[in-house]
Image (spheres, rainbow, N blue to C red):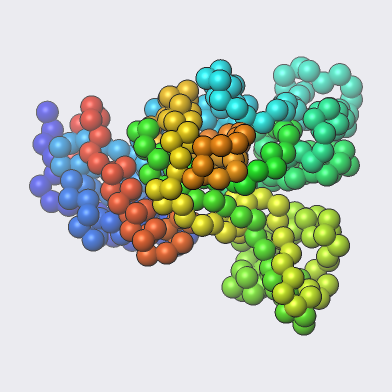
Length: 364
């Protein structure tokens, strides 16, 4: 049996642009908060993959914000919105009505295309789902995170446009689902315990009677969006902000009235520029129970639950589970304030405890 290393072996540099999960891991180790960790081997180009060696010989593989806490099959199923909804519905939990639509490549590959225009077929099928559900609806890739290519659609034309855009990516399947007009919350759960809870809001600009929409967005972002193409409100997502603004009668060159609040993007995902308010421990037992049941239904120990409900502090009212995320990032929660940052760090320390039953590390 190999012996645990006698000295720490830490990759000295974190690549620029490394994900928050990697950066937090290194910060905690440097602060002495991970005394059982003796080796961090960080992939040097992107910092996305890290091998963590423990004093007891255990090994953990971190991948972005995923610290390897969940079973791989559960994490894979949770990453597929259709499969996740199936498991949640089977546990008598409420999820939005909707249906999947095969995109052109996968439609052809699976042999389900019935004409020579698989994109047109996908667009028609998606619009039919939207018509049956009633508008507005949401269209999103079946697999994906951070709100990328998720769009709220007001009519069949919006649905067809959303499908066409998603079809340009490597997505195989899209989901069309009913809009749930309730406040959006994120519950973060570890081993059945709700360890963080916050309400999320879409990105909003406030007018001063002088600045245009484009200038106000630049101010909110903290730099010109033309120089921040990967920011959720930057060039990559201009089609989404333009569509959302147009429904309120605004264009990029419109001057916003003094004190007027204007929603910039429909999605309240923090990765798409949304805001949040921390609910702390003020979460009613009903929502805690639903969160625990969602973890049991999917086999996840650690996850983020996107829950639409009226008020987290009250058990009353309808609800729906919008999504479940098997690798919830802590970056946006930590940015809410010093207390939230401390809680995020404490959570990461719990997640990075030495794994039981891990393969023994070999000397490098």
